[in-house]
Length: 358
Ligand SMILES: NC(=O)c1ccc[n+]([C@@H]2O[C@H](COP(=O)([O-])OP(=O)(O)OC[C@H]3O[C@@H](n4cnc5c(N)ncnc54)[C@H](O)[C@@H]3O)[C@@H](O)[C@H]2O)c1
Image (cartoon, rainbow, N blue to C red):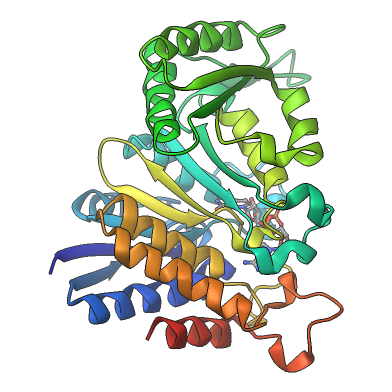
């Protein structure tokens, strides 16, 4: 039996809806395995700006630091998406959280549940067996470098920078993970053009010497974008920089059928943050149709990575698998063959998972 403090940070839009379901799953796991989980909540994003004027209030950050793990939803609001000149923005809260908590590695498992082979726009015979673990660097690159305007605002710039230290620490995490899987690692860069990528490749090649049992390949990001769709089963562990990882993992979400299925873990040296890869999805907010499975699978990652609870985590993944095997779908993963009575809303899908958990 373990006692753990979990901070729930739903954020904006469907973040509120799906995180509530993820929390219920954690609760049920605590009950089933005799753990004691306590919860607190904190604000981030648009809701935090509305309440305090700050997308990540100090109080939220402090609560994150004091927790054993954070279950996070999403940030974002159409108000800012349509106003590039807004000085205070929800995403600033997200970037600050990553930076302040030192969350330098973002893990995104892309695993296709067999039952969803038909839900992807990629042919089933190409997809079958796809199982990729992405490591996206999260605290460096063009997102965090100096940015600004010059020439009276007519020229804009964003500086991309990486240090040897930053590349090495994520490379080691990826190599360690490759060792526990199929011992294949693909490092993605653009070393033919970018200096940051040349440093990236140099460092990965050096780290590789410590992992002679792992087969390494280096690929350019443009080729990777093509191969992910053409031949996804060729990949095992993929490690890449912040910007490339952002784009490639959204592309790879199509391998899993929907953005609503993909979980992620952001880890560093302190509290880990677990979140779906999707955003706040304004188009479906408040309709009760958001797929909560990514939040539930994020809870599974939380149990495994932050708490070392492998059996508990596996139980959650199995419950999701059973729900899908029983034919239940949310709208985003349903197809023309799904009977209407099997298409569930957010809460009903959560209840179905809880039933299979018990
Ligand atoms: N990590 C984050 O917090 C994060 C990530 C991406 C985007 N955003 C923000 O979210 C807002 C919306 O951005 P977007 O529309 O580009 O991306 P999005 O991920 O919110 O939505 C993209 C599409 O996928 C669908 N979708 C996403 N999650 C779903 C789910 N769980 N169930 C069913 N369908 C789902 C949406 O309805 C939409 O059609 C923006 O403000 C953006 O800045 C935040």
